[in-house]
Image 1 (tube, rainbow, N blue to C red):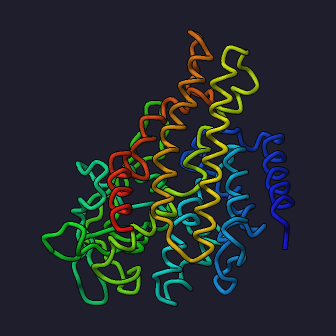
Image 2 (image 1 turned 90 degrees about the vertical axis):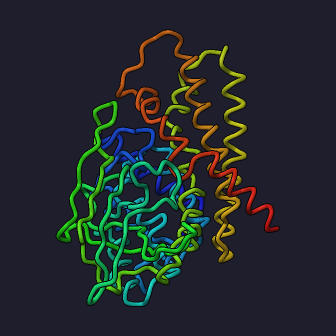
Length: 362
């Protein structure tokens, strides 16, 4: 089995080859915005998707630390990984943990091969960062469920083959109860996708409407009504990865190359903070390797990572002086994306509340 540092070199070489051939350009937020199915299939051919999953579902049976090496290098390179990122990062692990053997066999090999592209049906209009404020409903029907509702900020829904969907299946007074997770075919009758174009004219966000969409009964992830407990575990995968600290790395790399000595102290501080955050990424990976859901460590990483990413942009903006920044420059792209830093994966206030509750349980 390839040693971690050899694996790191292989990922760097692949990214360098594609970049030198001008098959992609490094971008900040590449895991969210830079979509290239051909690149994802190249990674799949090398066994770099579903790396930690069992071999019987197409995975490589490797450690989360090995996966961290691969994902860290892809993010540092600003590589186009959005096609497989959501499925690999959190949907696959959730299905592995809670899905039936039938669901695992049906979905996981397609993620590993980069044939299945997933989008996230979590956020809803007027709900802000309150994930439990779900109004999309799933009603039982013969053979499955009928889903009706709306989801928003659904990245790459227009390209996705499948959606992860959080819907309300019960009417309990506690809004955290009665939620259920589903896998929905995006080609199913009743699914409609509308684009949301951002300030740079880029289209990766969407609104998705589900109008009495039939979902087969075996497409439930885990237990009916237990979605909140399960999604909390799933968010540890979403919040605890290196994308929470390396989304602005192309900007930081540009600073190292171009900034003058007046910014040296600020850049040095950023690099020191990045070292600490990378150590926290390692801790999350070790927790996952031990079979635990690192809810607390992941929330901490997301909270500190949000502040770090914003500070990288502040230093870069000051280093640029009064010079205009082009929208397609890494700094320009990152600045346009930055309003979402404090929302995606949970607003800072939500994360602090989660950390306080986790501390109270100790």
